[in-house]
Image 1 (cartoon, rainbow, N blue to C red):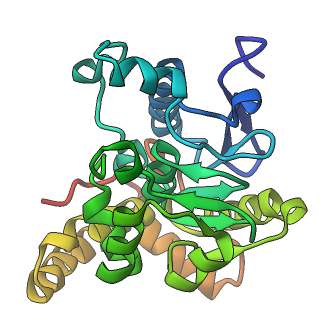
Image 2: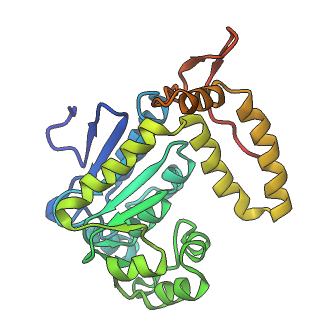
Length: 283
């Protein structure tokens, strides 16, 4: 259910704790606008605060995912206008700071800001004919939003340099081969596959543990192996004091699905006390 009859992003919630976000400007192939960006950040904020949301799937309406900034915005900016109040907006990296898993279902054109947002997701599903492009050099721009840091870590330096320097388009099939995409699915199977994956995370994985693992994946990029190992030891000690550890062990022994609390929910601790299952920020 939505508040606006034609919102630029649609929201749906499954009974298993997955929120589906659908970029909804199909007549423009879901090209990015200021209205979309503001709502995008707001919806991620809501999802983070909602213990019932345990995973997010991001896709596009119609035949495209997101081809980047709407051309009307690019045209105005290139002529000297200032239609985009970038200094008033948070960085376009919200999925990376989001403590729950985000799965992209790339159903078509994925370029510019759309390419960046797909990269910011934790896992990417795509159709074989999806078109990916880091089309910055072709517009006289640089790699935005930290993509020059993130892309080499996903596909290697050589592939990243190729994509960023050439702005060339690659298909979902090529994206899978270089590690940009995790899985391919035919168009009719793409969203069901992404939702099934997110549902499995929502049902079976500890939201608290996943939040810590996301911080490890991000923060350990700047650590040595030894630093990563030592930080993991500290986080492990913290995790073992949380109720999800006991529940994970008991559910395995009893051969039943685990019953983990959502982030922000109060969960019973074996022994009678209570603890709030919230992510710890790794330093």
